[in-house]
Image 1 (tube, rainbow, N blue to C red):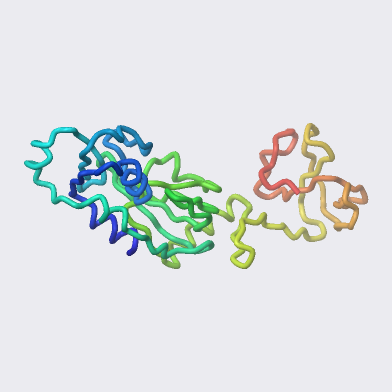
Image 2 (image 1 turned 60 degrees about the vertical axis):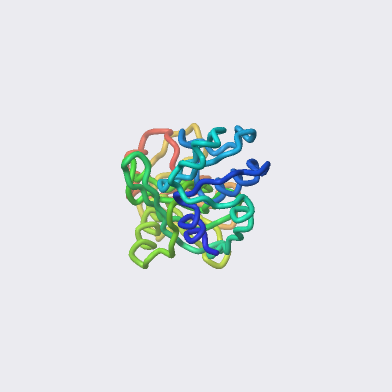
Length: 248
């Protein structure tokens, strides 16, 4: 059973836990269900009845009369615990996921990484819609919970993520299944910024060649330097000792 199928099966249900509340809660959290307050920690295992809303929130009670009168369709504890998920996605798949919370819709594009009992930890994740603060940059080794759907990304959606990675000076290596730094290929007489220590200011120079020297590999106007970055795109660093995200 896919995750989406399991979620649809369990929405709008009530269950008598029959002494298996902990296991049921863990199964529900694995599928993205949360307590009414948004928490996903096992608690109140002594409460005999659980209620699963259509908007993926869980509540509990110990009132038998209320449980019987509740209009939600009953499902047994064993039925819930027998659900086995077919994890459709593998390491390196690029997917789009989304959810609705508090009346707002959120979605993100991500490169699938490690799968844990509750969610995927992504190699890279970029919000496509949601909080403006989280839509401006890529997050790395980020987990995303409570998604209501996950599907393979389209070519256009992949491009959005790859473009954002490029702005960070990074790229996705599909063979190695890892995020790699983009190695800039300097050209003779290219305008560059150079320095030898992290606390030194960046100075303008012209690139000549790169050597095999591990300490000072960049030759610029006959002088070797430890660090060298393109001037274009880093103009604001000239004369400062500020760090560069892609310092080489």
